[in-house]
Image 1 (cartoon, rainbow, N blue to C red):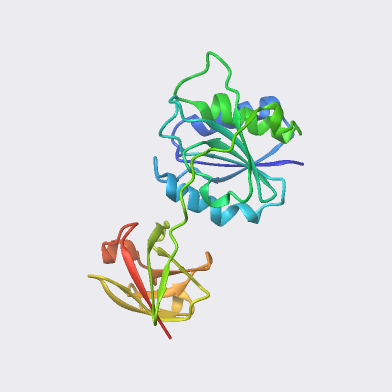
Image 2 (cartoon, rainbow, N blue to C red):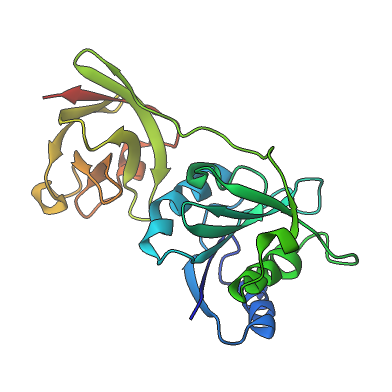
Length: 247
């Protein structure tokens, strides 16, 4: 059975998610649809790209990942179908696939006339994902292109006994994910204006609601609070600079 994952910033209050799933099932009633999340930050393309980077390989190769964070819906931005790293991706050409592009095959989807200018997830992306799940080749869905929107992953910079990075994502627990990879052995993480934080091995080693560093499941360092919200406690946001101090 083919799998389509679905992630968006639609939330779960309205009919948007169900409408997209319904259109997929009208085309392929036997496909399995798995929700990744529909609580992505509205219009936040870079956070959505990071979430996709973290999860897409947890699924079997050949999975179709439908990702819609699309503030440019209805504009001249291209709708895309992509094959990269053994997986298919469907969504807008706004950089949301930047972190999964690995020698990709990228196709600009042909869009039908008379569709909604505000709901391409239902009228374009969902049906394309369904057609791919039926085995339709990407070249039958549009024309191959070599120019598409892509932004680089923010790499941390090593200098002597320190590595310089930034906060790239904040999860629902308020954990502050950095772009410092776990391969670097750190004893402390410093955030200017917020302090220095010793690195622990697991969450429960931290004192209640006190901030500390830890290697998260993403294999990046993060700042966390045991049973607390580090983002609220420290008043930190995405893009704030951090410094890792090597052992």
